[in-house]
Structures are given as C-alpha cells and as structure tokens.
Amino acid sequence: MVNLKKTTMLKAVHSRIWSLLLCAGLIIGLLTACDDSGSPTTPATPPLAKELVLYNWVDYMPQSVLDAFEKEYGIKVNYVVYESQEGAVEDIRAGKLYDVVVMAPEQIPRLIREGKLAAIDFRNVPNFKYVSANFRDLTFDPGNRYSIPFHWGTTGLLVRADLVKRPLTRWSDLWDSDFAGKIALWPIPRSLIPIALKTLGYSVNTANPAELEAALQHLLKLKPNAFIVGNENATVIPVLAEGQAAISYGWAFDALTAQKQGLTTIQYVVPEEGTILWGDHFVIPANSPRRREAELFLDFVLRPEIAGQIVNESYYAMPHDAARPFILPEILNNPLIYPPNEQLQKAELTLPLSAEGDALYDAIWQRFLADGK
Image 1 (cartoon, rainbow, N blue to C red):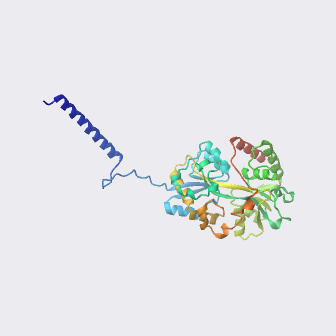
Image 2 (tube, one colour):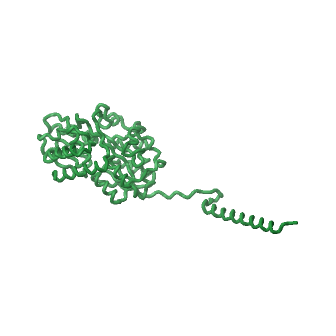
C-alpha cells in the first residue's frame, strides 16, 4: 500500500529543492553575466581617467617622458610645481587633490602618521623590482608601503672660481667674510640647518636641542652676508653666471647645467667635512581620486628605458639597476652624478625625525627667518 502522507511530503521536498535551485540559478545569472557565446564574463574594468596631477619641483621630470606616457595611455599629466617641500606638505594636509607627489624622505613619516598617504598596490607597479636593493625598505618606510625611490645625489659647494682668491674646500667657507654679499642660499630647512650642523661637527640628523641652538646661532652669523635664492628658480646657475653670487650650496644638477652651458668658471666642490646625501621619493596622497592611474604612471617611469631617459635628461641619479644600459656613458661615468666611494666616506644622509624632532627643526627654522627671535 502506498503511503500517501509520505509521498506528499517527498513531492513537497522535491518542489522546495527545485525552487532553491531555480533561485540560485537566477542569482548566479545576475552575478555572472554571459557573453554571446554563453561564457561567463567578469565585470568590465572602468576606463582610465584622462588626466592625472603630478606635484613636483620645477623642471624635475622631462617633458618627453610625460608626453610618452600620454601617447601610450591617453592620460595627460598635469604638472603642478611647488616652491618648497614644506608648502607641498601643507597642501597635502589641506586636502588639495594630487595623484603623485615627489617628496623628500624627511617629510614622509609625518604624512604617514597623519594618514595622508595611500598604501601603494605593488601588483600595479611590477617594475619596482628594478629599484636598487640598497634604496629599498629604509627605516622611514619599512617595506616601501607608501613610497618609491626616485632620485638621489650629493650636496656641495658651487663656486665661481674666477671670483674667489683661494680654493674653497669646506662647508665653513660659506662663513668667510671675504664673500659677504656674494653668498647665495636656498631657503630649504633640511639642507641649510644640516650644513650648519656639519660645519660644527654634529650629525645632520641630531635632535639635541643644544646642538640645534648652536646651529641656529651659526646660521645667524651667516645670514647678514648672504641672500636667499627664490625657489621658483630651477637652479642657482644664472645667479652665479651673472656674478650676483660667488659661492652657493647646490647639487650635481647645477654643476652639470653649468657645464652644458659652457660656464667653465663654475665649479662643484664636495666639502672635506663630508657631503650631505639627499633623496626624493614618489608618494600617492590618500585622497587621490586616480590611484590606479598614479600606480600606472609609477610603473611607467620605472621601466628601465624610461628611467634611463629620465637620468639622461635630468642629470640626477636614479637608484635603478636595470636602467644603467640605457644611461649615456658620459653620465654614468660622471663622478658628479654617480660619485666614487671615496667621496662618500664622510657622507651623511638626511633622515626623517621623530615628531618631537620635526617640531624642534621647525622652531629653529622660524627663528632663523625671524633673525633669532
């Protein structure tokens, strides 16, 4: 005898299972749309933006590189120039929209602490593998989560040899009263304060209040004999070429610019106390609306042939192993750009400071601007 109650229950169960399967099928169909062949397709990748904003020093990225990027990807790079790192930091803090910013290491930790930088998705920057190992995983950004090395080099003296009566070899020569009125200074706190510290025999990264006070008093002795170069200038070379200054501090880029212009009287000196190494990094602000495009740009400039092009046109060294075959021999073998090891024996790299250290340096700089008050 057929059990009608059991049969009815089985039919109800089967009906419920088919309903669930049908619903699941509809849901799957909605989630994985099919193309004309019936094969599932993934959601379409949003189109790339037509523009990204690069915030950088003046003349610090060859236009030819920006043009090549636009030609390949259809993304125009809007190159916006800042006058100082401190101004750039304040603009980022204020929420102004930039997609890629060139930033000194000294500024990066404070921006990370404040949540102003985006973590970089290195799946979109595979060419990071070419960055020299010695420049990766530095203390201010372990794992390079927020930054990618860009340029590096030495700091030294730029001298109009025909306007001075003796060879200049030391940082302390900036304080020689014989050059009063003929000393040009860039208003860059983490360059000028370390020069004073180096002259006094202190570390360029000290956060000792007494040593910083001594550096301030030393700079105040220099200030009446010097004049400030505006950051709107890409180089101090015109100031030296025109005879407004006989001595300044500067970088290999300046010396190479002078050489290119045939200004043989302008010399570059690595001071006996030791050079001060500098570096610049790419970062992406946390509020960038075009992070994918920013990472695409970073991967582009890290291509070996593009990195070589940047070095050839900018005269700044890049920490990029695979770019070397693409760098002109006269640049690769130029000690101004790639200095020999003996010139680096007494070198110090300016490093980021703690929040307390940043506050000390900021206070020292403001007092320097206010004549020590």
